[in-house]
Image (cartoon, rainbow, N blue to C red; front, top):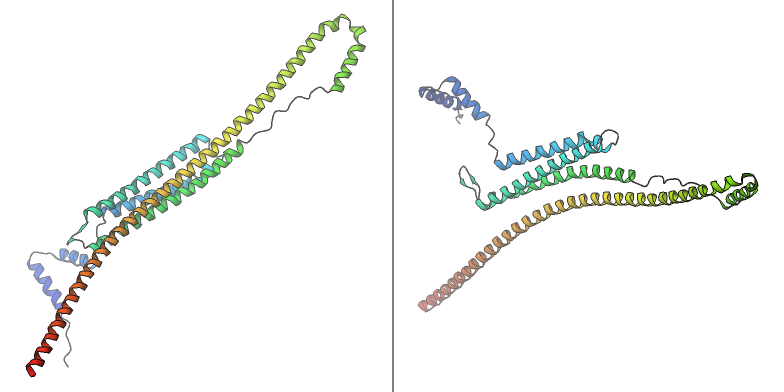
Length: 316
């Protein structure tokens, strides 16, 4: 048995000679062969570039939160204004990432309605549906990543609110001046009565002053009690307002998460509706094929029976 000879090298040599005869140089041939060996990566679609940009923005947000975590939580490192600035920048980051994710969702709907095309022509229905499902998965992953990052900052925010509530608790109440006991007042009255003979006219002049001082002391104590109650009410109101602010932010976060889940469920419901419609079409086609096959079988058996009867009659 003759051995098979490898003619690949001869083929390469003939191709090289033909290329040189058509004006190619050795450098151009080397570049062309390297391009065949190491193919360039296919260009990324606009959706992929936008998704990568969104992921980089979310990573940048996460790095920003990690960098300023201690500055935001520790009360002795930054002021309230600086913490408000950090919170504002995080909010701007989150809003930008959310807008980018919304742009990706709108692009999915546009491609679903318009129908993407490949370089060979129109892409078939199955590959288009697979691409749309893949894009929905990418958007869902980006939404979950953004939610996990915002959840980290929500924990830091709750720690800040808890510290603010702790600091806003009622302080030590103003100490009241000790009231004059009845025993002391009676003792002073005895002293006054014993000194009536010695003081004489001086007591008559000092008694109204003592009465006025007593009235002033009573008014001062009443004002202190009223101011203390007002301070407690203000501090309680401040605590409730901080709690309401924290609950409002948590509610907005949960509403955003539920909106994303509702949008995902809506997309799944639309996809399921399309699948049901496609299934109904397939069932109707199957029913038509079944009815046509039954008609063919009946016609076949009728012709076969007629043929058997005809052959029996012909033989007899």
